[in-house]
Length: 131
Picture 1 (cartoon, rainbow, N blue to C red):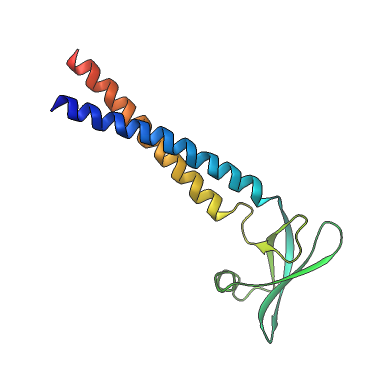
Picture 2 (picture 1 turned 180 degrees about the vertical axis):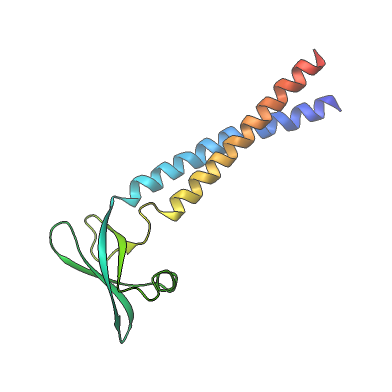
């Protein structure tokens, strides 16, 4: 029975650390490919095709993007909003500077590494309890 518990704890520690490191590497790549998002103030307008937001980029160019349903709900009733646009990209904006997908993958990586840490601590506790 003791060897079964040791094996399970060891598996959880290896999977936690190994998979956590892999997912953390994926989160880092996602962060790098996400690019730089700069803050600006956007003007919201209603058009025949839905609601849009227009803003000036750092080069003085005018950009516009159609709002998604979630963005429309978040900005309901507003005429202006603080947004983030992608540097070098035309017509790309979002309401948060950091990507929700990157944040989710990074939290998954931290959770897996946390499982590895808990399994390692459990393994050490079991080692000293038997010793």
